[in-house]
Length: 125
Image (cartoon, rainbow, N blue to C red):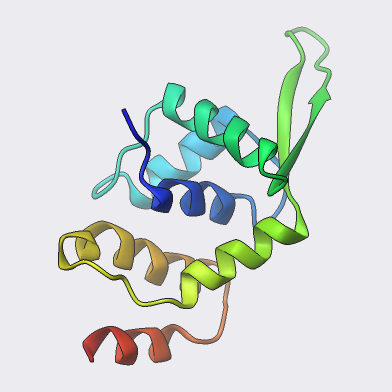
C-alpha cells in the first residue's frame, strides 16, 4: 500500500517538540488525530525508515534497564523545513480536507505557530 505524503508530514510534526520512539509517535497521533486519522504501527515504522533515508530524521538506540533497546527518532533541519512548508500550503484536493487540513490546524495550535489564520484564508479561496 502506498503511503500518502501527508502521513510523512504528520510523523515529522509529531517530532517537532522533541525526540520520540515509534510507539510514542503512534500514541501521540492516536490521541491527537485518532478520531479522523488512523496510522498503524507497521506503517509508522516504514515511513520513519523512509524519512531517515531521505535525511529528514535521524535515529539512535536508547538503552533501557529491563527492556530491549529502542530506536528514538529526531527531526533534522531539512525535515523541519519540509514540515513547515507543508503546514503553510493549502490542501490541494477537497477529498483531503477532512484529514489533512484538520491535521494542519492541529499542528498550528499544538506547536503555537503563527500562520494558521492565513492558511484558513488561503484554503477558503
